[in-house]
Length: 108
Image (cartoon, rainbow, N blue to C red):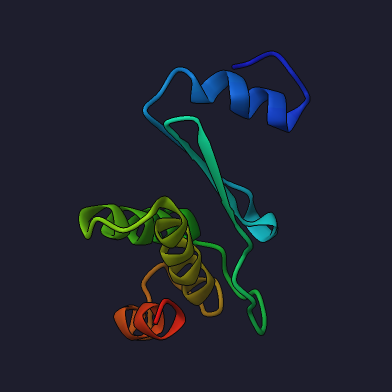
């Protein structure tokens, strides 16, 4: 715990302690700090929030898939946001859409 109510201060203090810091912020999107460089992504637009179950896991899956593919941190954040946005629009924690296709369309 960084003992501060200031989000940016907490991020700065924590980022210096880990190789890569990723912070999700629900409808406010997500940020990552790697090697001192901060990247941000807005939350993907959705039609309707139905069930947030699995959103964090799906975000992590998308982000880590991007890392595994050697993508930029910004693209990894976008991939995570796409995955999280899909899963919160229906009941249950598993995606119902083709996430690979959505990512390819968005990052084309």
